[in-house]
Image (spheres, rainbow, N blue to C red):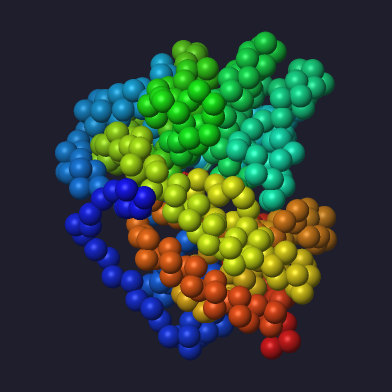
Length: 456
Ligand SMILES: *Cc1c(COP(=O)(O)O)cnc(C)c1O
C-alpha cells in the first residue's frame, strides 16, 4: 500500500474551531501581534511546539488510573525505571518534572565558571543552564548542519575534527561532551549512529564523560534505520540501545519522545555522581522515586516509552513533515531540507526577501499564517535571537518559521489544510509588511514583546 496512514483510530475528540479573519485580526491587535499571547482557543491548528502537546493513548490513560501516589517506593516508579532501562541501559534513572530540571541538576555538578561544554547544538534551556552555572556552551555541528539547502542525511552530526581540536585546546576546561538527538535547535536534524559512536570514543579517549540529550531518541533512531548504511534491517529498540550504550548519562524531556504531557529524567552510570544528583533532586524536585512527577505521570511515561518505538507510528510521524516539505518545496517556498523529525522550517528571509531582517520576515510570515488560516507557528530568527547583550540589535543567522507537530494529534487533512494556507499566503506575500517592536522585556523578548505593523 502506498498511503502511509495515521496508525491509530480516534476514541476521544477535542473540537477545534475556525475563527473569522476579523476575529483573528482583533486577537492579533490585542496581543501586539505576538502569537504567544493568543488564547489557544482562538487557534485552529497549533504548531507552536511539539512539547507536551501530543495525544496520549488509551493505554496511557489506563496507566494514569493505575498510578500509585505513594511518597516513597511507588510501583509506578519501578515501572517507569524499567521502561527507561529497557531502552537506555543506564544504572541510575532519576525522574524530574521536565528536561530542563535534569539539565539544571547535571550542570550543578558539571558546570561552573571556567568550564566549557561542547555539543552539536545546545538547546536553549541546556545553554541557559550551562550559562547560569557560569560555564560556556559551544556548538560544533558539521557545516552542512547550518546550510538550509544541504541535503546531507545527518545534518545533526558533530564535526569530529573540530571536536578533536577543541578537546586538545580546552582539555582542562571541558568536564563532559554532549550531543543532542535529534538536533532540535539545528532544525530537528538527526545524528548518525556512527557519529554518536565516534563522539563517545573521542570523549572517552580524552577522559571525558559523554552525555546524550535524548529528547527525540526514537525519531533519531528512525532516521538511522532509514538512512544509515547497514541499519535498515534492525529494530528501533536495538538502535536506541546502541546509541545509549556508549554514553555515560543522558538528559531527557519526556514531553517529546515519551508521549508525556509532562516529565523528564536524568540518567547516569556513575554511583558517586548519581548520589550527588539525587541530593540535588531531593532539594529541588522531590524524593528520588517520584522526582517532580505524580505516580500517574510516571506510569503514563512507562507506557509511552513502549509505544514510541513503534515503526508504524514513526513512519507516519516522519512522513507528515516530509510531505509538507515536499508540497511547499514544489510551490517554490524555501524550506529547510531534508525535513527534520518534529517540525517543518520555512526560510522566511529568503521567501519574503522584500522584508529586511531587522523588520522580522519570520514574524511577518507567522502572523500571516495565523491571520489567513488560524495556524500558530513560531518565529525562530531575529525576534528570538536579535537582541545583543550590549543592547544593540543585529540580524540572526537565519529568519525561520517553525511549524512543530504535536505527536498523534493532527491528521493528513490538517496537513493539506496547512499547505492550502501557504498557497493563499503565497498569492499576497509580496504585499506583506514587516514589523517594529514597540515594547520588550530585558530577556527572552520573543515570549512577550509587542509589535506594530510597518506602514499600517
Ligand atoms: C524540550 C527540550 C529540552 C528541555 O526540556 P523541557 O521538558 O522543555 O524542560 C532540552 N533539550 C531538547 C533538545 C529539547 O527539545
